[in-house]
Image (cartoon, rainbow, N blue to C red; front, side, top):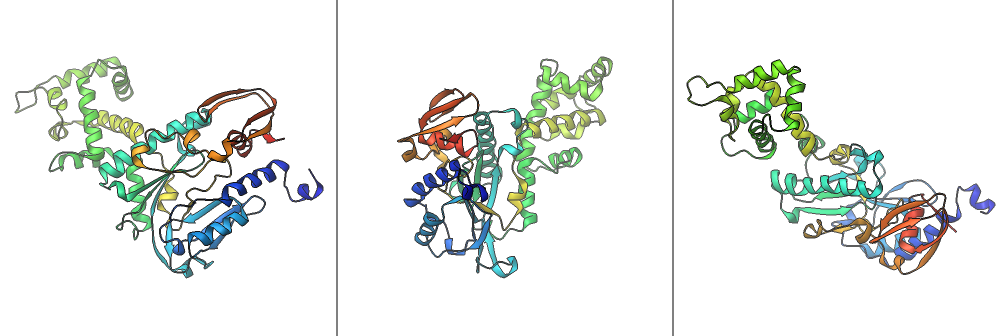
Length: 391
């Protein structure tokens, strides 16, 4: 490495990575970005700090800029502004913003012990749940209202672009974020809401009611449910007393309490005593833990957020910020579908400081420490993620 490069914190691997990014951006195919001229653009160069408060009139102008600057990361605002290039936020004159959900490994329990491939699979589960259960299901959005992207790193970005979304305040967006995360529900409030349900249950109420029914249907037949009873009552004697009480006839009805609790609907909630309510609370906690979506809440509530530019390269992976059609989401595999095709057609040499194994591009690699000649897309991934260096 030369003295000049050393003085500026540059190394040969970063320079080579920048050159490869330049090849990609020289023929960059940027998809149409809604109201591009109203978006703030920001970027992080390979050698330097974040630059933002830029604006461009059209895709051609932006593409020319990117191919010359060659950013390590490039972003655009989820918000629309009258004057996006203004440096003071109030001077930009905010016109509205997309609703953004950022799902990333940082919010997945146990992610620190997972491989990159495991992280991608786990985050995809949460993204699938967010899209198909919460946004299209509970909230009632339509497919045309959503744009989905692989982030290029360790997760996914979901943009809501429906007209009624744009003017929502941060507080209103926080309510949506709390809903998909299952936050802000108290057992007492939820039971009250159950009793006030005028028609068929839906959303969290339906998820929790289903599990209540399941709990009492499989009582004494499931280790999971036995564990809940143990947590609530502690001793076998107290558990037996609770189960015995469930088998008593409800006053004024010719049916056992447990039979009512095994039936879906609101009736059971009017017969819950203090012990039943304690069990209900544990069931509720379990359902929320299993079925919540782990999103980055500050991203969703921020009405000025910068988010990664579609079809740009992620500077810490070399993978594409890839748009995904909803009908292709199930089969989407980032380590196959978010690669740069032209990079795979060349061979590059990297130096690995240790043995390393992973699947990439549909091939399982078991690499030895030292010099390795590999397909360009995988080499770029290894260097961008700091697993290897170019030789």
